[in-house]
Image 1 (cartoon, one colour):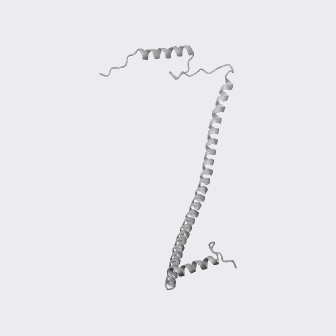
Image 2 (image 1 turned 45 degrees about the horizontal axis):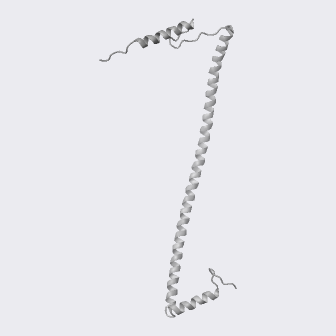
Length: 158
């Protein structure tokens, strides 16, 4: 039989016991063994309390984690539902826009088909918001209007 406890064999245990008897004495040895036994029992009690407390905390955290996971699953399900609704609404809007632009495109295509391919629509003058017959006349008018605004002095406030 191999008696090794914490790297201490049977001869070392006997040497320690003989040393205790010599140092403490045979009268005080039972009292010392009693105090050592109580100290070990107290340490075991504290170790058990710490282990139980860590176990309770672990179980509490495990419950909290499972609740959070369930919340995340619910949120993901809601997000999927909202995503489906949004995609459906976007599809409807795209269909509406396509229908509206198709009617405009057909109107534009029918107007251009009636006109000659060489005819170019007259540009709209951004200053007067009307179509011009001669573009050089409209440019002169814009230049004249700008020069008049530059020549005018600012109004006096005082």
